[in-house]
Length: 237
Image 1 (cartoon, one colour):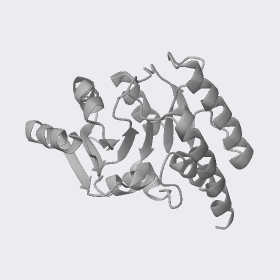
Image 2 (tube, helix red, strand yellow):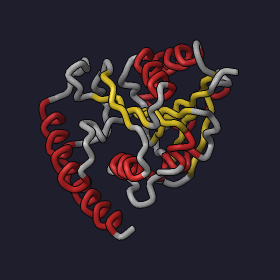
Image 3 (tube, rainbow, N blue to C red):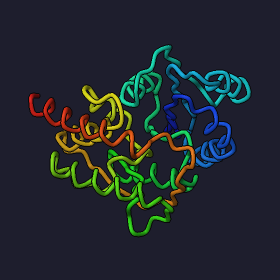
Image 4 (cartoon, rainbow, N blue to C red):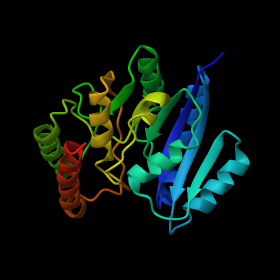
């Protein structure tokens, strides 16, 4: 019997990104279905644009696309927890709505899970990764990596990669309890390290999205505060 995979896309005001990447989403789904039983689950919480209407249209057109709606804004961490409540597959891939890597990369990530890893990170910083990332984003990412290592000693180079694959049962055991926004990736990885999970980074073909919602100037200060808060609360557990 084929094992199953869910491509979990977390959405908030992503109408444009979803519209621009529908063909790519379906290509990823087709690629995964060559070897596994795959579906797309789109989690949407409190969008003020046409995201929900667009998703509803898609679900009527393709039964492999499913939804999980929340009426209030949950944040990335809360959205993951809520979205995962609708996942029943063996593996789950958490992915940004702009689908910044190639279909073959998704296949490689699931293969890496089947080879023994519990968590797989699509590493945008690997020397073998084909990526075109703006210098401002690279600088902010480098500073964030140094800070994360200083506070948590997490050894991975790309903790904030928006594409991560998990064995579903493993992810459900390390869901974020503290971080609700961007730093939830750090919390998940920290909990995975504490549980001695095998975490692997792999190179990918990465395409930086023009409509990326993260803003270096406005979001960096809040990320710094979130990291310090996360470190403080984790030390109390």
